[in-house]
Structures are given as structure tokens and as C-alpha cells.
Length: 499
Image 1 (tube, rainbow, N blue to C red):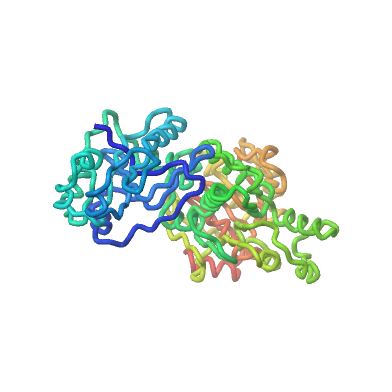
Image 2 (cartoon, helix red, strand yellow):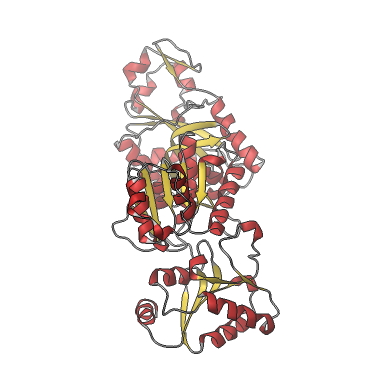
């Protein structure tokens, strides 16, 4: 018997639906929780220029995808009606929607994974119909609404579980959840540094799906997925509204290029129609110069020179501005952003625990617990020694040294004769194509946005802001070495926090 989908597809705009907080829905969710089934509510699948809204989806990891439609039909509604497969029906007919549902999902799986994906099954949530009333319906209705595919208002948890489990085992091994739902819900798909795929967490999804109003903040530690989440949010906003203008601000030209590459990788992999030009990724100076250009003023070379006259000339640069690493930028620039964007939306992304933040990412995806080592010595000599020791068992690209510009150049000169590996003076004002990042990198504190490494060596602590120091420490995936020659206020603060 062919079981037809209960969903309408190819709607031009995703609809919103809140499933009732009914006893039946609660029982269904409880069954999922007890049996490790993943439940997804009010989701939209995007593919090419099309989108498909699903009120409720449950992933049975051993059987496949279960799709649900909520219906308010009662026994009185059904006893004098007929069930139709067609989309056009008179007032006496009840619609079951289209067979193309499965075709749509299979097409997406095939284009992304080159196979049909996983089995798909359909169920109906009948809040106003019980199992006894069902028995009195005519056979034509029962044929299209099989008993095993309906959750009635009097269904027990054990009956719900049996219906979800009473499915044939797949003929081939099931992929994991990431490769099933990540390929369907590309707006939640995160690519890690090593190229592996991951699904966004619940807290990340809440942010990605949120409607931004006014000035909002997102906070979280390094490796909490903030940057990946703002990319996915920007993509989802443009999928929902292709006319929207979004600007993402990154501190440096290099960090802009890295983010652009991540954005392009996701769009190309997901096979979705997103106008790449509608999501601009620019530096603070580029944003201010755009403002000045509209005001017919000369270009501004230093962001700190924003004056009161410029602040008074207020207009929105874009429908949504997302400022990444906002805590690393001058407070004058942040005030300027809030002023020019007062009529539209602004999201400030910070790398510290802000209790008043609109959104907070508590989970960290650091591969190992970070070890912080304080070394009091001649910092230049100690840096050479640490680098030499690390290179005995690690690649040069696993090491990042952060210092002021003078130390950076001195260390570069000495390393040319001290180690055989190539060292690179990072210049974050240059674009990604002109950079050679697969080597030991030497950079200053103002250049480290979007960088990370297995080992990070920090120098010149005393005269650097704590925000920049802590950001640099958290770039390390395994160990951070803090080098200093004399005790200072910064060292005391860091030791109290980390040692």
C-alpha cells in the first residue's frame, strides 16, 4: 500500500507553526527522550530556490526519518467526508497533500550525498480522534489513514513507541545524525577545521533562528562556535528574505577573507541559492569609509578618529550588521555602530562571559582542555627554546607566536638561523590569497582575529590589553605559553584566573 505524505511542499515562504502543548505531544516527546530519538520542530528544508516546511520530524537512528502532520480533525469531521490525494478538493474533502514530499527530500540527499539518504515514513497526530472512534470510520478513509500511522489522543506511550519502532530495518547501514540532518538542514551545518561535519547545538540553533530587533549581543568563549553561527544566521536570513542587506564586520582584511571562504564553502556544498553579494564581509575602516562616501567626506584612515559630526549623520548601513570580535575593537567604533544602526538591527559578538548578553554559548568545542604555562625568563631566548622543543614532535604550522611588532621582527630574524622550518611574519592587512599560513606564524596582537593553533606563545604581556591577551590565549587548542621577564599587573591578573 502506498502511504502518502501529509505535507504541503514548495511554499514560497516558510510558515510558522506552534504545535499545541497537548498531552499527546508531551507523550510523543517523552517517548523520544526515553529512546534517544531526535525531535525537530518547525523546520524548513532549503534546496536550490525551493523550501519545504515541516512541522515535526523525528529521527529514529535505527529506522529512518518520521514526518508528522498535526490535524484537528474529529470523528464528526471525518465520518461524512472523503480523503483526497489531490490538492483541489470541495468542502467535503480532507487533503493529505502530495507524493512529491519524498521526491524533494531524496533529491536533496542525492545531490549532496549521491544516494537516496534514509527511509522516510509519515504519521498523523490526531488530537481530536481516539482509537475507538477510528474503528467506526469507513474503509476508504482507513485505507489512506492506516491505524499504525496515526497517533490518537488516547494513545499510550507504549503504543506510540511501538508504532515508531514497527518499521522495517534499512537494507544498508544508517548514517549518523550529523550526515542525515546536516545534509537536510544545511542552515545548521558546521564544517570543522579538519573538514568534518557537525550539527549546530540547541543554543546555536536558537541564535541562528532568532529574529533580531535593535541591538543584541552574543557572547561565548573561543571555540564555542560563534563565528560559524553568525555565518549560518546570515545565510538563513537571506534564504528567508532575499532582499535583505547584511554586513558582517571582521577586524582585519585576512579575517574577512577567511570568513568569506567559509561562507562560500557552505553555500556551494548546500546547493542553495544565496546572492553572495547580499552578505558583505568588511573591516571597520571599510564600513566607516562607506558611510563617509555617502556623506561625500574624505576617507577615514583611522577608526579612532570618528568625531561628533560624523556621529550626528545617522543612517542605516544595512538591514542587519553583525560585528564579530566586538570586544577587540575600539569602544568609539562600537558606539558609532550603535548610533548609525539605531533604526535597524545590530548584533555584537563578544569573546567573554557577559551575563546580560542576549545569547550565550556555554559549550566549548576545544579538542583538549587548554593548558596554560607561565614562564619567567628572558622572553626572547625562552621563545626560541620552546619553539625548538615543539618542532621535535610537531609541525611548524602548529605554532603561533603573538608579540609586539619589534619582538616579532627580532624573533623572525633569529629563527631563520635557529630552525630549519620557515617562519612567516603575518600581515593581516593583506588578503588570504597572498598569505602563506601553513608555516610557523609570527603576529602582533592586533592581527590575531580568526587565527588559531595547537600551541600559542605569548610575549610582551605588560603593555597589552587584557582583552587581547585573553583572546590570544584562547586561540591555543592545546597549550598556551605566557612569557614574561618581570611581574606586572597583567601577569598577576592572568595567574589569578588561570594558574
